[in-house]
Image (cartoon, rainbow, N blue to C red; front, side, top):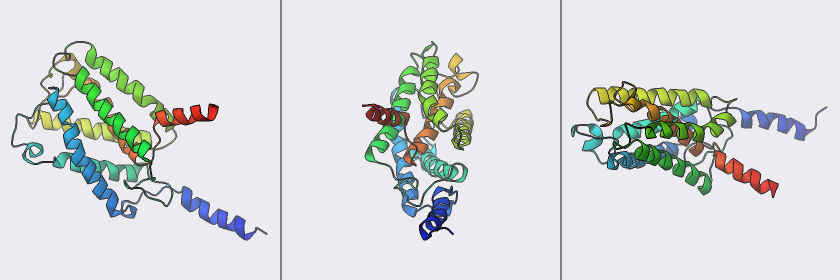
Length: 234
């Protein structure tokens, strides 16, 4: 006969380990937090604009007429919902962003990596570099940078989420640029692969966008795992 403690463990553990893929189970504060991050994303995009990578000649584009771009607001909330449906969340506790609670260090690593990836593509994809080998260097660096986290999550649904984010993001930009909503002045170039977007590095940049969502929802950054392993070794 099992003890009451053993029965309690058997009852509690499955509920804690079960993946929750119900969007309605996420707290309203999480949706507000992702809307805020969409507003922040509007201004992170200015990195590409300042460096001449992207231009907005169409002043009627909704992202230009308003202080924050509805496209970014929709993207952050939409990707949060997509992550919930595809990857899911473990445990009963919810952090600010609706996933596993994260520390300030986790947030700094996630945000810093995203801004750094954006800046990297801005510098290596700028018009003065667009027709050389530097966009391809940017592409290679982005993939090398993403691989440790992708490998660590190889037995989860994160791969599916990453592929969906990349396909949706590049597809949206391809459609928007082809309709004249905004433009990449460097295209056409070899890095654009015959499209209206710099396909060489845009796809892996969206991979980093997916990893950014993952990290703010509790996925550990490869650098933190490396630092923790180093701490244990010493």
